Image (cartoon, rainbow over the protein chains, first blue to last red):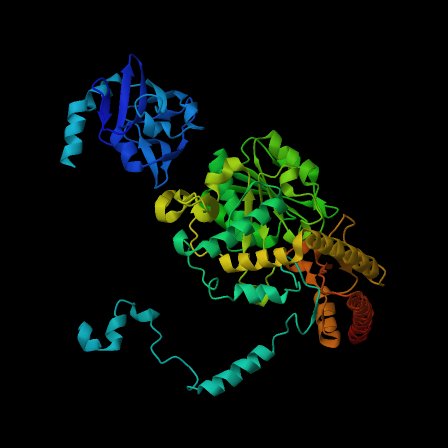
Amino acid sequence: MADASYPDDLRYHPEHDWARIEGEEATFGITWYAQDSLGEVVFYDPPEVGATIAKDTAYAEVESVKAVSDVIAPLSGEIVAVNEGLADAPERVNDDPYGEGWLVRVRLTDQAEVEGLLSAADYRKLLESD
Amino acid sequence: MLAAIGVGSVADLFEQVPEPLRLGRPLELPAGMSEAEVYERLAALAGRNADAEEEVCFVGAGMYDHYVPAIVDAITQRSEFLTPYTPYQPEISQGGLQAMFEFQTAMSELTGLPVSNAGLYEGPSSVASAGYLAIGATGRRRFVVSRGVHPHSRETLATYSVGFGAELVEVGLEGGVTDAAALADAVDGDTAAVFLQSPNFLGAVEDVEALGAAAKENGALLVVAADPMTLGILRPPGEQGADVALGEGQPLGNRLDFGGPSFGFFCATEELIRRMPGRIAGETDDVDGRRGFVLALQTREQHIRREKATHNICTAQALNALAAMVHLAWLGREGFRELGELLARRTAYARERLAAVEGVELLHEAPVVREFAVRLDAPVERVLAKVAAERGIAAGYPLGREYPEHEDGLLVAITERRTRAQIDALADALGAAISGSVDLVANGATKSTEGVA
């Protein structure tokens, strides 16, 4: 994905993660800015399905040609699915960070946390201020 | 200099050290010597060492007195190779990287596993590194280790295990090989890895595949330490179910050199590649489509991964691994197999020859390749000292030092440097020393009895 984009229907975490809230569940991934900073992603080390993850802590690793980075959970919950497709095609995180490049699907344990996340506009502002 | 740093005297520099801990007098050092005098003194001290060039060496126990062909020195001493510096810049390091890649290819073929690193420090730390890898891969913290694994490797793994918070369970030997029933009992669903060595410390070839079944059934990794010199004729560990095959690399192209430096090798399955310790050289194409080499998967390493690095090694034993590669290339595929066959034949001869000596019997009858264990009917250390002093033969390694249950055990190693005539001389010397020692003991006993009476 060549140009920066931050869809308005997603919520954002300052550690450059997004969450797509769908009722009691949500899908997580990393933002355009995160994948652009990392460079070509070559490996995704997912958590196990069933694992419990906590907001603001690392739940997975993304490895690019430049670095290995922790992925921070924007919300707390239990992993219900991981993106198996990334095993063979980790570059999807770069090509389509908000679609094919999703990382995990989570059953949320604390809906109130959602309010603490940033809107697309706020996240853009955060990036500009950096 | 004191004035420049604002200190009154040298003694002030040590103010932080509490008074009772200070020596309070000058060190008792001898007067200074000229360079020529130092040379004479060190030469005299060095002259007191017995080495493998002087003695006929049957000592092995992990390090072996192989012949290192002259070409190994000719190539490793080229200035382009004579640096351990990390070849992070492929544009100026193609030769070194290609050598690493070829080394990895050779080790991968020998072990029967698809991935090899460019070398580690030595055998024992390679074994311990496999422990770390197994914890990461399985999320478990329990190791089951055969007593046939080199004692130094077991000790190193035990030391690392303290830091890992891992439990280490040892399984004994039966008839020279790992007790299969005890191993099967020891391995459970919490076991991260099973560690075997083949040939094991007593020289015995283990049935890796059968022993490894317990690991497979419980989802534990199978880690096999191997003597690379035996891999020309033994079934590769990778074909017997090993997830990791590693070992001490010294027998390939590296002299004994007072115990070091040497190197370790480390090979694994493709699934474990991101958890591998050490460097990995990879083959690629440059912008013009020409074949080239780079360091691959560097994101595992500490300069990128920081505290999440799989291993913090920067000074790879690249030069030692290069020596191994040159030795292997010099021998060639056929030559390496023939060397293995020669070792097996000559070892069989030595084993038979020694077993026929009065006062010597086999410690086990398991199959061996290049090393075997016997029992002596006399105090082992005394026999060794006598044979060394009188015949100039280092007869072997006294097993009692590491295995109290084998106080009468002697481990004898054979390399291609050991001729049949030398083996005959060893048999003769052992026979004489044992019967002499028996006489001594008998005389001593008589005397002391008389004294008491």
